[in-house]
Length: 391
Length: 82
Image 1 (cartoon, chains in turn red, brown):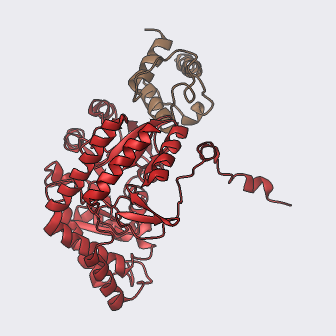
Image 2 (cartoon, each protein chain N blue to C red):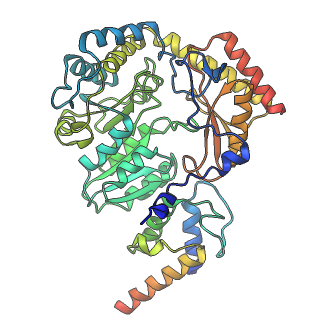
Image 3 (cartoon, chains in turn yellow, blue):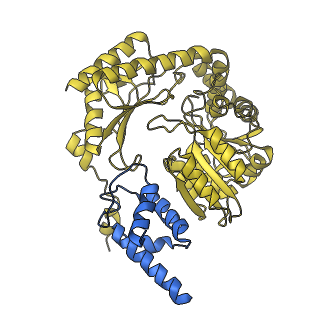
């Protein structure tokens, strides 16, 4: 008996990559995330990573990581509930809680894992989860795992959300789930208004601030600071691998719920703790953010504006947004890959999105110019943008 | 509004982008709806017609006309019950 038909399931559709003559995924990078990265023997401007503040290769962060390795070694070889709960871990829970101004926090191996584990831990089949149509895959997968009624609402559409809330009062508990910054085109949710609706209809708000933490707000504390939300009663999740330049995820909120998750969230309880090096790296980044955020933010937003102006000048159709993201509308899968290929050939690494990451025929290319990019590299990037448009 | 018009209006009210919809429109190919959009449509139809829809009943739906057929069948069942 063979397994031919079973293995047939795993055929990867590479037609678009073949048509474009370019596969933008799993490309090998031979260096760290400096402003230019080494790929296949040449230097490329990195506009693809989520290294918003440019701290992934900061010397102070590296030093903190090396010190942690010297003190704790490579791994904690245990879950946080057992040998993974070192003083560094506990201190970081406290620092992160303080940073986002919430009562308590758990730290997971990734935000994807956090979002996957959250809903199965807190929601029941008789509940309703209302979620923004464009929410991240980690939220959708986490929500689907509950097996309760799911109602998507039109992207950032408060009227549509309120209509659903009005008509959905027979559920035991209602959750409203959204993101702060939607990562493919950089638009920001009207979260304060969503909280108001949640209070009006007795629903619990849940926000994923992965692209907001370390980016939004006057001091980088994310969406809650940006929208001046005080005494947030909902649940907050975020990635520690974007502006905070390490890896992992966090879930924060009221003490009662976080304490419950510490014992009943399987994705936390049964996962080996983040390594000491990562915990120390995050701690170091938080220190830098607390003292240097203003200048980092100015650089980040200045870089974004300069690139935006050159995209406009070159005639690209882009999304206007507040977040430090430039998103070029490329529509079809083929055009998205072809445009990404042109950028790459001329010296820019970008992030192309095609379905199912975005709706069908709404492909886009995201450019994030981190705060570590110098003036001369930004100018070089602008010239490349203009030359790509001409080809 | 007749049944077809009510369904088309419900669809239009639950789509990110305005587009022409008629009875022959294919949900995936013409309207670019994915499984999450269809979930949103099912919930909206439940509200519009005050019924509960089994998501599996929608697994074979291809066109707007298929939705009309499904809703007609649901209405008939409801009437027969009464």
